[in-house]
Image (cartoon, rainbow, N blue to C red):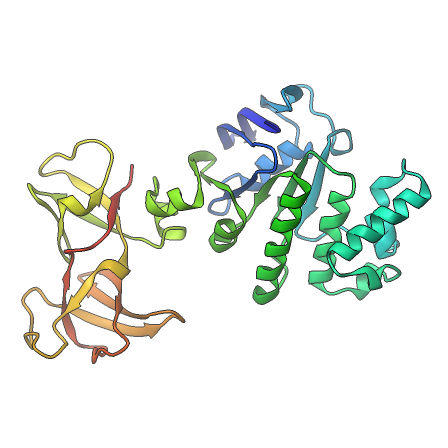
Length: 352
């Protein structure tokens, strides 16, 4: 076990930013923290880094207490590497000097060898004599990461490290970063607002909502069994609707969902109103193919048809609610048509 945070709570004035957050990382594990804006993600990372004074709780490293309320060593006294969105490279130092900055206790020859090896590992050895302001955003990000890795920290803390980089490069950078962290065996806590990034980078994901840990699990578990509406809509790609429990099905504004299709914890009472998430790609659309009735019973209006890069999606309306459903690229469905939805094979979960 590397780093362990226990019962971390924090306030800014009267506002509770974090409430009793606990987590622990195995050696070499990558944990991503995700949540809505203002959920406490960066505050938790700053507390772990020593940039924010601890108010309650404890941080341990390899079983030894590192910080507690009233004793919060600064970052330079913690065996952690830090990388932030703005990279924070020293503008007056060359790339090589930036990378070697934390190696001042090493012999010059050893320091130079370490810097050269690190620059080679990210394909930037030919930029050693350049200054940060002459580099692209992606190059600066790579330099910031290897500078943080240069001292072989036990833990790496990353706060939105790829946010300022364009999407195609961001995907390559996070792949390179994950491989580099795995090879270094460095336990990592990374804050991101991007669910795709969290799914691509993390071994486990911590989801914070209003300063509360609503779920901590693997990407697969969050995708299959989201415990909160934010997770369902942001990570799992589900859509939220309300339903009424009946004996064998759930009555929704768009049709009846078989109770057997519903993933839930505990018992559901007949007549109970519940909030559930439905995966739109598992809903069948009827009423527009050859052989379908021209005006299906319980038909709903199609507001729009869009191509999202992977699927054609229809936006179907019932009253004030809308539901996105995947349709065949060969379908003749058009905006303004009326369709029925079939939930026979639909996947759905009840939020806890």
